[in-house]
Image (tube, rainbow, N blue to C red; front, side):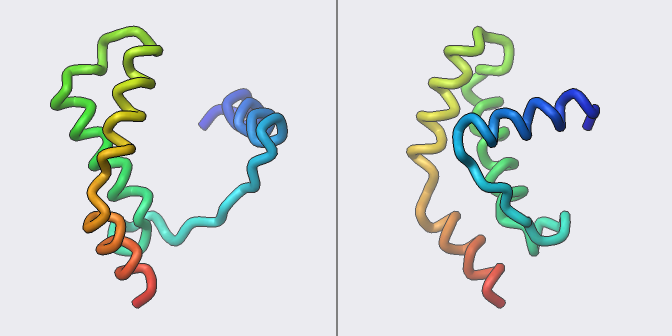
Length: 82
């Protein structure tokens, strides 16, 4: 990640009052966000939303996110607790 991108992320976190979260190691078994990111990527790719406007992509992501199966998040979180 470029220094400029890191600065932009810090600024966005500050503007929106978001706290930085520490995540487990970068392995799929220990990092549920990687699995969720993969799921979202597969869904967006299947909907063919990668080469559309930013607004359409955002709407697509929100739709996919809201339809995220509870069983997927439960399974991923249970792995973290082990």
